[in-house]
Amino acid sequence: MAKGKFYVVWKGRQTGIFTDWEACKAQVNGFPEAQYKAFETRLEAERALAGAYAAYAGKPASSQKWLFAPNPPVAESYVVDAACSGGTGRLEWRGVHLASGKKLFHEGPYENGTNNIGEFLAIVHALSLLEREGNALPVYSDSETAIAWVLLGRCNTDLEPDERNAALFALLDRAEDWLAKHPGRHPVHKWDTAAWGENPADFNRK
Image 1 (tube, helix red, strand yellow):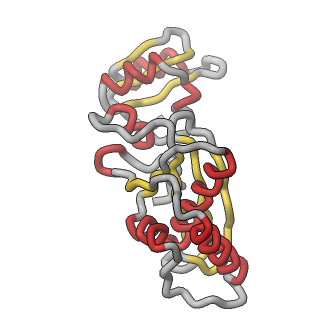
Image 2 (tube, one colour; image 1 turned 90 degrees about the vertical axis):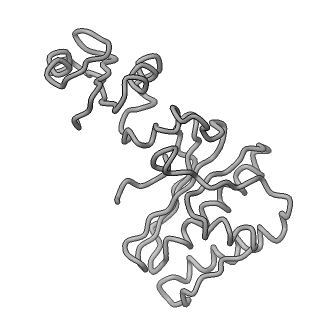
């Protein structure tokens, strides 16, 4: 358990908020299936305690910061992100439902891609999923470049196609075709990392 200022115990010998690790540890150490997590502020801890442990389990505290922001994102929305091993390398992307944290899709890895390509494909994937579901929800991405490409209707990458990324470029063709056929799309917004914390779809590899 990472150190924090306020420790929430949902399941332990005693439940509640504890202000030091030793007090928290006394409640959870050796307790079967104990549920606990550290938070940076008492407000975060109080709101977490009022909710369910499942909403916080396995997630960095920063991914929940949006819950406490003065001007938070729309909870009923899809959030997307991508991860690439290096400037050009193995690429994957995914999307989550913001309010519940439920994973909606996870694609990859694909060889010889770039992060911007993954961010672009993630947005289009989310948009097409919303279209199929008949949901009019906003989509959030922390990539200004990918959002601009979606608005443009094409992936404006400098990456050259080759044998390794042929499957990836086939997906780009499909994504651009989908954008061309769906001009009236759901809104795509910039995820405000400074105000809301890490994008909840982030792969936590930074």
